[in-house]
Image (tube, rainbow, N blue to C red; front, top):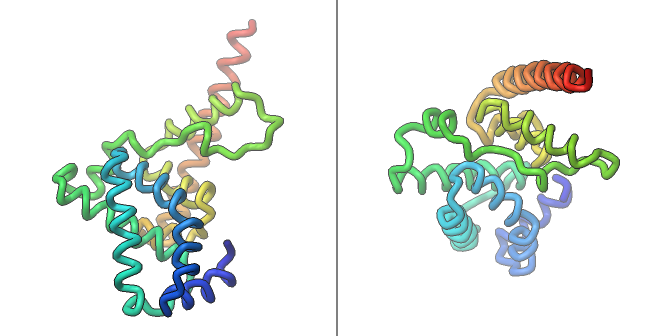
Length: 192
């Protein structure tokens, strides 16, 4: 769903249109669930949070107002809901500490929508390489490339500056290039 078709749908939702709410739910539920699961690494907490989140949206729709980018708004709001729930569960003491020490924010082969020509070996290698990134780098890559958010929206979701997103992506790609080169050299050495 693109931004131009989101705005009228959002307006209909705010006005109480059940089909608009259903459409928002169907469009974003699985994306938000995957993102929430990466943050919490707990299926129960993620499902509970997501259901509560959509109930909250529905009950408070008249107070939500105009939103420029619905997808970004939903990701930001849901992220806050998951972190708030984790804090209530006392699963972490600080946001940075929890995400940096967490191994839950990783990639799986199913999430990597790579052209069919890429072999399973390359796909597995890519997953390993992506998971070698820091948690923050993995989250930025996930939001930007697998959730389709802009850099501005990614910054808003993660509550960091635009420049921090750019810097984090640059560091991630630098590390990936280095890891790919090391991996290719290792593969060549194994053949000899």
